[in-house]
Amino acid sequence: MSSETSRIEAFSDGVFSIAATLLVLDLKPPTPGLPFWQGILNQWPGYAGFLLSFLYIGMMWINHHRLFTHIRRTSDALLVVNLILLLGVVWIPYPTSLLAQAIKAGQPRYAAILYCASYLVIALLYNLLLYTCIYSGLMDRQHLGVAELMRQYLPGPVICLLCLVIAWWSVPLSLIINGAMVVYFVMSPSSLSVCKENAHEAHSTLRM
Image (cartoon, rainbow, N blue to C red):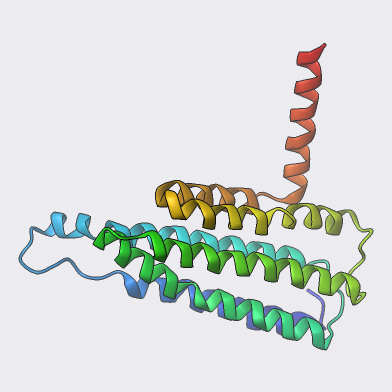
């Protein structure tokens, strides 16, 4: 950890931790009068929303850590963009709560659209943070790790926009794609490169 970025990373880690903790506040006790396990099962939208958003926040923290391993110094632009990104992170518990309530009420479409729109904004902010660091000279664009991050971040907003559009017709499908996106971004950029190379080699072998 660079001494110049250590305070930013420490503050950011605290915000990520608080946002992940706030998610659990939406998990309510079972409805009085119902059998215990039935009451627990009736709360499944809250559990599902908690799990998906916790994984999302964890994925964002992992990628934030990967990004900062390449940042060697700070700037005012970095501080501002990182702060705006953290604003998006602490916002996540709110649309998560709305989505869980809307699913329970049987009318999840608009809450799902807001939920997906929130992640679209965060994906754009991650790209903004990355390119702010590159064009401010805070990291080496030619470094292999930075180039891999650029390739991994680029489709993020497009996938989030796709989830938002799909949410209008199918909320379950939209959330499934959201879950798949978590897996995609948790994988290291180098692992994705290896997977693509293996897939290309397998395809070339099949064509021979």
